[in-house]
Length: 295
Image (cartoon, rainbow, N blue to C red; front, side, top):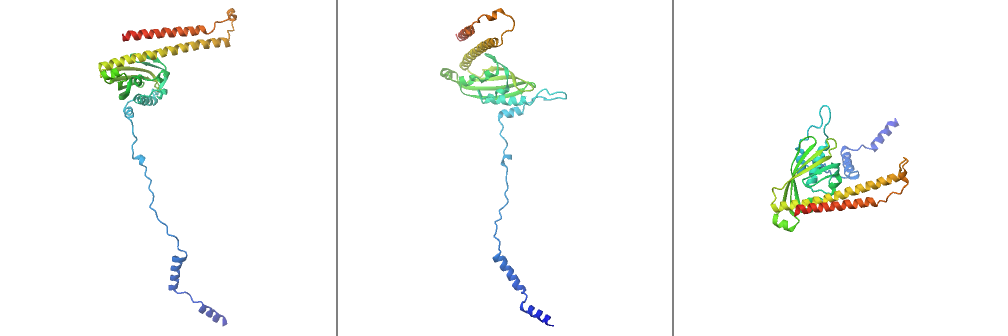
């Protein structure tokens, strides 16, 4: 009977806490001892891409090219053209507007491209790297592309105009600005898009008579000088070809039994004499032509 009494005494020594004291302890424990730090709740970040709202600026040239009809690239049997034709059209128009000289896109032209205008004609892409007449003869020229059209899948026509004040003070005072309308016709390779041929024609009806005189005079002098450069380059090319031929002959002798191969050959002085004579005749010819046109 002692066991229940002990159990009762034990229970009477440790009274269970009341509900009010337990609630007070929880409030103390939560608010005092283990109270976590308050965190600031920031609003969620919203990333806005403004680039989608701003339309990409397109130049006047690009808008012209966008409205052009480049013909049917492919039919049911074969492809007769390529997207490179459109790319070349855009690049040529940019080069015209920006008056690009040494930094123009020369890959748009074939290596053996042909050029022709009323005063000059040449063959070769390298000659496009020479300075332009428009930048040498006019002060601050302004160029505008007026029309672009595809006559076929390989024929491109660009109508453009330029104006500027002559660098010669006399013609600048007497004639005013030189205004020229140009029509450039290009023959393009339908696969690579490169220019195979370019033909330019000029219309000076909007310029005054003194301005027209300045244009034809300065343009003829420019064409004469460039033609002289062409002649010199051709003579150098011919001379270097003859020299290489002699070198190849010495390196790889003729295996045939030629009795003259043991004789001494003349030195390279003959080639130099031919080059000098050809250069002198070319200079005299261009001087005579220039005097005939100016006098």
